[in-house]
Image (cartoon, rainbow, N blue to C red; front, top):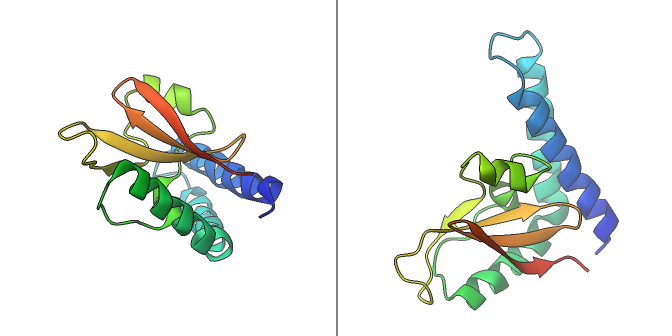
Amino acid sequence: MNVNALNDAIVAILAKKQELNTMDYNDKRYDDIEEELHDLEDDFNEEYGDYLEDVLEDVHGKLKSDADILLPTAYLASTLDPEAALEEDEKEGVWVESDSFPGVEMRLVIVANPPRILLILADQERVLWTAE
């Protein structure tokens, strides 16, 4: 796995999401930027989907979670700065349940720099996987 290429692909998607989030729906460029984002996401899932789905399967196993594993793009953060998104109380990533933490709201999110999967528990985050 080329970690730098994976990171670049994640950064490109997150940058495009940030660009889209700064626009109003009435902006004449909105649809074009949204289409570019979808193309980046499709390419990402095609290139890294199988690899990241295996990683996510391992992460779900460690958490003792039987939640469905979604496409990797569903887990991507919405910004290049995951701390800023958490401070704004956005719901990053994908909600999961765990037999190890019954009744606790948890989310899995993929972030960049370096590519990694975070477990978000209330105001805490734990790195569960880092690309190597």
